[in-house]
Image (cartoon, rainbow, N blue to C red; front, top):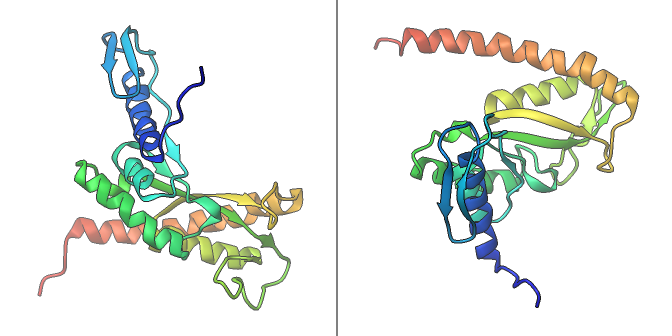
Length: 205
């Protein structure tokens, strides 16, 4: 007798319940009993260590909302970046669900899978006709990623080759030695003054 397949909606419900249960079973404390719709456990001792952060690659509205309610982070699918239609329409679903659950939407961080070339010289255009990032010089990368952090709330990036696989060693080297340090420096220079202005409060009229 085969195991019945879950409907898409039930699969999302099971996914969300599993995240909740994993959290209950971590961090020590009293034995856990959980009688849920999809999972039942009786008096299981939680692990003494905290649960690792839970990241999702949610795409559909139901799973995006589940991400907002219970997950720690989101990685947009299909290498969608901060200027993509996918991100523009998906992130608000996460934020609204987080707020409805009493969470600060900023708690759900976003890491972008980012394919592209690292070139020796600047490119005339760093995005194709569809608006997708194709790469550029280290300086162009640094400018683009700094904007993603400061203007679109990016928490991190995963570099892929243009074909979606592992980048070549030279590009990885330039990413680690030139691009990432430049982004960190630029973000630090901008974030520091912003925090000081926030601490002083709004200007007086």
